Each structure stands twice: as C-alpha cells, then as structure tokens.
Length: 166
Image (cartoon, rainbow, N blue to C red; front, side, top):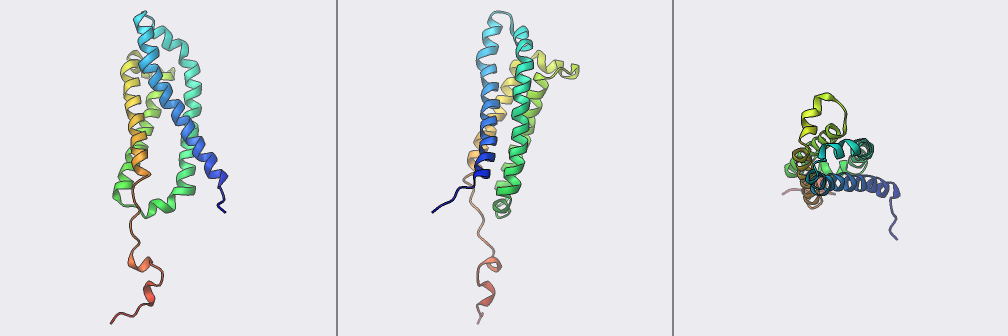
C-alpha cells in the first residue's frame, strides 16, 4: 500500500495556489480590468483604488511562493536535482530569475515608493511583462518535470566494485 507524504502535498499546494492567484490576478488586471477602466479614462484612479488590496494579496502570494519553493527544493528536490544535467540547472536558474522579476514588478506596481512611480505610470507595459514572465515560468516548470535524470556513474551502480575485470 502506498503512503502519502502529506507535508509534501501541503507545500506543493502552498506553491501552486499562490502561483495561480498571482499570475491569474496579473493577467486579469492587464487584460480585463485595466482596458475597461482605460476606456472610461479611469485607469490611474482604478489602479490606485485596488493597489492596497492587491498589495496585500500579492505580498502573501510572494511570501508563500518563496517559502514553499525553498522548502520544496531543499526538502524534496535536492537529491533528484543532483543527478540532473546542465539543461535542468539552466532552466531552473532562468525560472528562479524570472520569478524574482515577477515579484519585483508586482511589488513595484503595488508599492508606494516614489522611486517606482515611472513603472506605475505605465501599468499596462509592466503588467504585460509580468504576465509574460509568469507564463514563461509555467512553461519552464512543465519542462523541468520531464527532464530526465542522468544515468548514474559506473562507480555508483550497485556492486560496481565487485566485478573482476579480465
């Protein structure tokens, strides 16, 4: 009978659900809400009105993604990743950098710092960039699940040292 590692399941859910909320919210704001408000000339007002609420939701999502991502990697994936080749490592690195980029853009758009006011002045471009980066992360994640592990080195095979060579 198979057993289920419920902690692993919980942390997987704590990674997938915030990713869905953050990416879905970003795509919704870019493709539905912002154009609807821009058509009425209220895009800046609308963005200011939802900023505080979206800042709270996106902040929680970002925190959960960081915690669960690190937990999942160090607790469950570290052993598997050790045996993967350079393709896995390169894609994982790109995925991590893109995620940090999305976190930055969303944080800058929802924040109040005057330094990022130029980004908030063009929310459509920034939301498009964050959405494209988020979709790329999802695609890379799908590829990472299918990257094969490297074959073990002959010395790592069971009984490798016990066979006499002629």
